Image (cartoon, rainbow, N blue to C red; front, side, top):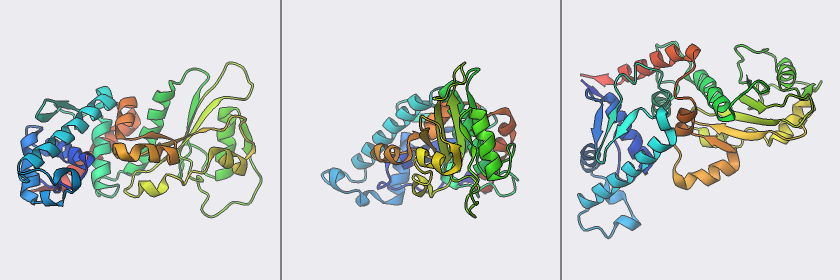
Length: 314
């Protein structure tokens, strides 16, 4: 039996190559994928001629070029391992990666994010799981870990449809402001058809033992789909968001955050952060939530197994 993880081309970037190798290890019976696997796939695809500029001078376009591309992807894998810390479910050598034993059976955040990034939110049909909602829960857990919540801090899952908080937008704003201790509640203004959560998915804050305003607050948006880049600017400047919906906006405007299950390229990073705020991509999320919250773990494991099973062929 084989698992269809798709092909990879020489013209793909190192992040795409690294994803392919991780999926190859995840789908392999021995949990291993290697330098040779990547080189063989690039040669099989016959795509090395698609690479321009820096590789044009190479003499052996079907040998040395492929190996240089593989070297680049193993550098990317090493950076992932360092960025994700104990949340990274693979062990690296100079020429191979090895999936940790029983990683798929555990609550590995990284593996869920990898599958979600590669196959999309609709991939687990039949699992009765909404992975985009679990991604919101995991993002909130990562934000809580990053902020290091203590007795005077808090967090709030504002995403629509709300599962544990008030369903209506004004009531949810009231509840959020009450929880933070700032904001004064919702403005008495007409609701808009698209309002729902006004692009706010998660909120976290650092408080003080006194009641005075001026807390450190962060508002974040989650984008689990392939259209994530178009969502970078959907959450307005947080000062504007608070002025639009709150009676008495926080004195210190909340910091903006953006959560994606994907791995961003080095070239993309500064631009994405400048537009979206503090970016939590796959490795940062895995580092700050190496274990999925208990109430989410079973659903995520079921979804991941369904996705893999759907791509297995004789």
